[in-house]
Length: 88
Image 1 (tube, rainbow, N blue to C red):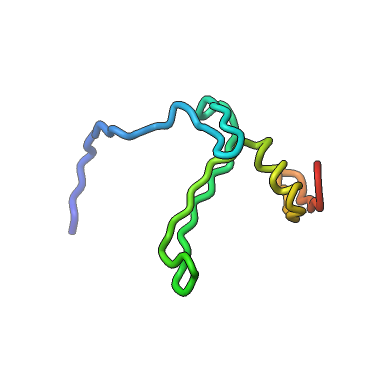
Image 2: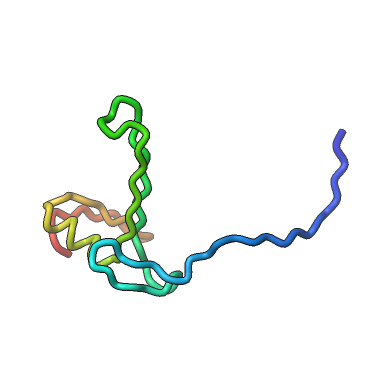
């Protein structure tokens, strides 16, 4: 059997204060603007096996890139699911 007690701990962590869009270079205040962050580790057998890619994109650049490259995407919100083939 385990007995427990409540302990208060102080935690120190790094919290971003600003985010730089990796496409347009604009600086945004963290937690005030919405950003898309991509973090992906390539899997076994890939040409980039084990490599990790990271990018931060502002909302404007994300949708501009999707539209420029004709990427189909879905926007899911609390009310419905919509599929887009191009610019909003």
